Amino acid sequence: MAHIINEVSRTFNEFLLLPGRTRKDCSVQSVEVSTPLARHRLGEPSPLILGTPVTSAIMQSVSSHDLAIALARAGGLSFLYHNQPIEDQAAAVRRVKTFKSGFVTSDTNVRPTDALRDLVELMERTGHSTAAVTEDGTATGTLLGMVSKRDFHPQRHDLDAPVSSRMRPIDSVPSAKGDITLTEANDRLFDEHLDVLPVLDHEGHLHRLIFRSDYEDNKRFPHQLVDASKRLRVGAGVNTHDYKDRIPALVDADVDVLCFDSSDGYSDYQADALAWAKQHYPHTPIGGGNVVDAEGFDFLAQAGADFVKVGVGGGSICITRDQKGIGRGQASAVLDTVAARDRYAQQTGIYVPICSDGGLVHDYHITLALAMGADFVMMGRYFARFDQAPGAKIPTKEGFVKEYWGEGSARARNWQRYGQATKMLFEEGVDGYVPYAGDLHEGLASTLAKIKATMVSCGASNIPAFQTGARLTLVSEQSFQESHANVTIRETTGTTH
Ligand code: RVP
Image (cartoon, rainbow, N blue to C red; front, side, top):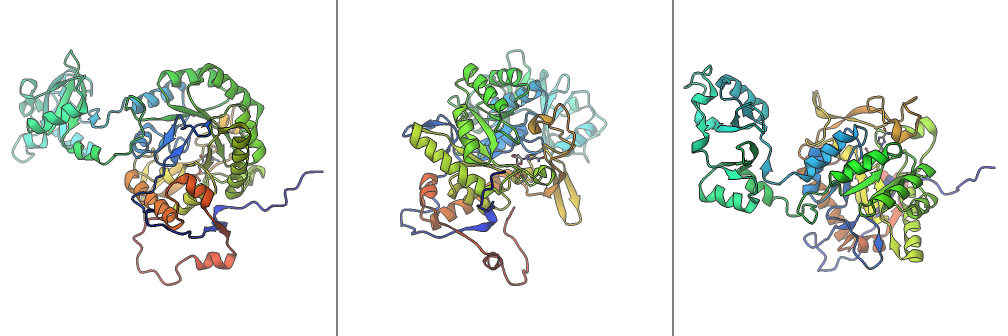
């Protein structure tokens, strides 16, 4: 007869935190939200520590290189999706690793023979008012000059004239060599009263541009997640099918951390793949998952996973529970695996962090996941709403929305994640929209402010203290109703997700 677990499967909505004593030295300014990502000996630091306890989901509609750059600049980490050719995923890793804050690849480029009219159109499209004039009109062509909106006026100049008639030619444009550091470049921008400084290679090809306006921008990100060479960190998803080819390519591109991406990580396939990865690339941390109980956690921890990802069927785009009747309420899954993690740490002296993946609908769900013991979270829907996510932004009567589709949807057809032979025979995810939420940095800052304020209310100055000291209560249907505003709302300015 089947084994029945009598405990009900619970979700985050069924819990509330109780406030704890807040001491005077515990404030939102002093709260620390850094957290370990990879396994480590108790008492020793983890080889990879997140500054912000959030990661973005291994999904086409979420973790592009643009989002990865934005999230790492905010102290979090993206796992670039693997449902793409190996060389494309490795190229995306390289784009993050070669991103130099302040150094940008020019996206507004023209040939000297192009008409000013074409330049105006291009500037409208990119939203930028400075263009590089290169021999072939590309971002890496030989630089012949620079032209900005200050160099011509559509009413004063003939728009059919060539760009060369109004550009500042290269001999009058100050430029720098490829090895210039950001500090040196910023000194030159200010000392020489420049708005932009092109960086050229030794043959005069354009390499990067540095804008004075970006100087302040860099000051905005004091908590960037960087490696020992000050490059942004980035993760990548892998699967148990082509890992022997994919992992070497990703490591070669200098990926910082990998994660097996599967809707069911409690499998011999994943144990074998983890063993192979640990044998060939022992210095690249690799996570496993997804699982929902202690048994699954122990299996992956013993197989060598550097962290274990928890959650089946709770994702906002996920229909696995409808289609297959498999899964577990996310709160129950986290509580069970966290207990297993702590037992494993006691028995072996090794701490294997837990990532709560999927089903986080409100900001406070992140806080609850951390309070329940998760070390960090992974989110899809949350990040899909931002400018930096790859989904198209579409106007509707109610405002803008962004596309968001599951890896198990017909659109993504990620059969590797769902173990459905070599093609998807049925869908496990949907294709839809999420409300547009603007810039990632603004959204995440608001979320972090809420997490920190809650930790302060609970009297916790850091995540480990929060995990050990948090007190949670189950809520009844009636007290759940009491949680919400009970008046007619005039206008809402707050951000929820
Ligand atoms: P959410 O944050 O609730 O949008 O959930 C994202 C998570 O959902 C992913 O990290 C992944 O584990 C899972 N997922 C991705 N695609 C699908 C699907 O199509 N069913 N599920």
